[in-house]
Length: 335
Image (tube, rainbow, N blue to C red; front, side, top):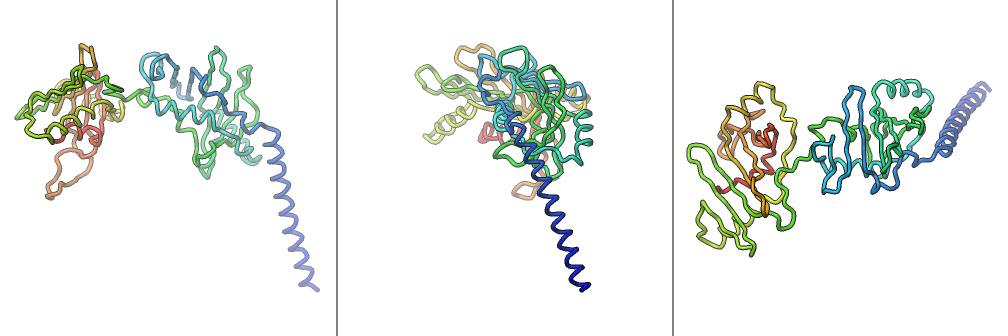
């Protein structure tokens, strides 16, 4: 009898818990159905012409569409196309995943008030069509706490857990304000047949200069080297084509002020690369400098490599930057 009674209470408890869970899920579903799942989304991203991002530390980034190939950053630089495209994709595909559980609501609101990034999305007017306040990720890193701004400039009362369709992860890292991270990284950018001439200066104990040019009839000439075979011709054609699209890695060079000054004023470059488009008088150019390794690496013969195998320092338009050897080594190999 006692065993049956105990079993009855256990079943009653399990039934109550299950009913509670169904009720909670029903409440959540009712809440999310009463709120448009696509309320954060921007359906027509082609008409987005301005994006403003601000964080709680006072940093801002203004990205504006122009008639040129690239968006403008803070009125001064071109913005990274890949980063802008990622934001536009996020605006289009963002959806409400679920309401914030009531037990977490107070803490989430406090975090949003203290650290949220503000994102204003414009479509031609002076008033944003959407304003997002973006907080931290959920504990499982599959959603992001976000709240919408109202038309009168106030913030909506209830935040939501938001995600992007077709993506697993959180969204906050896409909305950064560091100008150096936002800047377009193109060094040489010559679409189509725009590239006319390149020069490669090898500095050091045995300096050497090479130049490759293409005339209006698409005939290539090379100076500083002898073309002894058909393979040599293909070698220089490939070298020339590599200059059509070359990017640095980042404007964040991670140097101290003293080290940056030394690089800019006293260090001697290992290579200088120059390129001209058709009719261009002054070339685009970049100076490359060897970088000390961050850890010991060895060549195929077991010798310690004196330089970093992944990156080099560079000076581009009077700024010290970082470049990847994966990108620049093919421009230099065989010279």
